[in-house]
Length: 565
Image 1 (tube, helix red, strand yellow):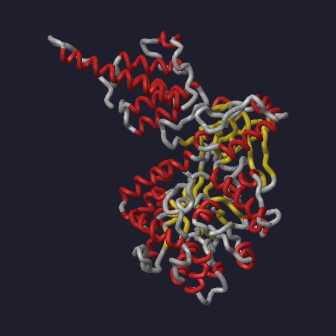
Image 2 (tube, rainbow, N blue to C red):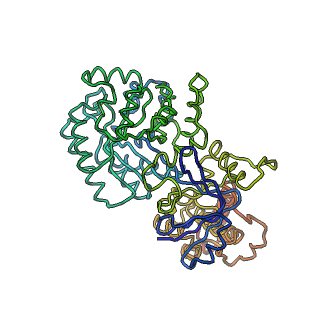
């Protein structure tokens, strides 16, 4: 596995009220953080380190490295419904929108197509770890697991369990459900992939009776699995659970043997103390709580009670698939509670970042850059040209640390996936969309991304394995060979090599004078990529016009090869 040294700005949460912000270096070997230090220590570290096997990545002043984001609660099958039905209360929303969609995942082809998009989208958003709810269907949820493995995301994946009848007919009988959950656990464990774990997933007490919950608890204990579910999310839900579980002391009592409970809003003090005593972790999902009008979660009270809290997008009850949005919503909800008289309820942006990283990973092997932790990280370019954050000449920053903190604040409040230029899981870089979302941090990387994107756009090469190899190794020589192999016309070859040479690549063809052409000397944004694509498109049209003219001309002629669109 690769050995990396990152030199530049980095941030690493230490605790809820302590965030390390520094300019320095982080050393990663075989996916593990083995060393880190300040800028002042860098020269000595480099002098005493054998750098022959290392790749050194030097960040720009406006870039920073931070831990990967953790989505503690997301419904993978619900992505096609994102943004729909959010004017309905929870139980009505489930019956009208959610259950009919989730039933479709018995079609494995449909499941594979959707889950491929879901995992890539979350990685693109910087979500290196996700805790997924799948669907009721066993094989459909195994497709989700396969996509997680394909793209090397870190994940907990759960097959949803339900045995109480509903109008949509979306449930299993108890014995079948327990058997399928056990099969699912065994299938995931058979993958022998340390980035993915099965998680037992009773949907909630409205859809699972005591008999099924007991069977699931036994399975969780047998296979040492965690459990995830929902609790006290909606007042109507709470009342219904009381009706069908009259012997329970409260909602939490129904789940007393569970280890993880997701999405709670209306917890009593007694329930909060019970969850803390059982070591339960909580996923706070402010977007869905608000969108479905479930309530405002008293986050500060949960933290003060000693509960471990992370953040969740809860798609599609939540309307955004990025944890950055969950941080912002959590700050908003807690601030609203403080405005309403709950003194000290508001959380800060630093606390929000902690919840999105180390909070969601507490007692796990990720979440910050401490020595010995696995390296899950995102590289952020705050002022990336195609991104949403503008850079101004005025600044109130006085020190290097203040400048780094200002970068982080801007990203937390304003940033999105366009600012996330590299994603790492256990030390390995991930390319969610292979061609269009790769690194822009080196001239070779930019050139490779550009040429691969154009070749892919015009169907010159469509072999995914080849694309991955070229792109991940940034091997421009292979691109040059491929161009020759497909006998790209002189005009289009000139356009491609002009771009690559101008970017500092080594893909120079017969038109090396492009180096001084003054065109596209660097690729700074998606807009530049589109410009080059337009140039290639124009070349294609011109080729076709030439070819048509040749075809209509008298006498024999040799037609130049054309690009297929």
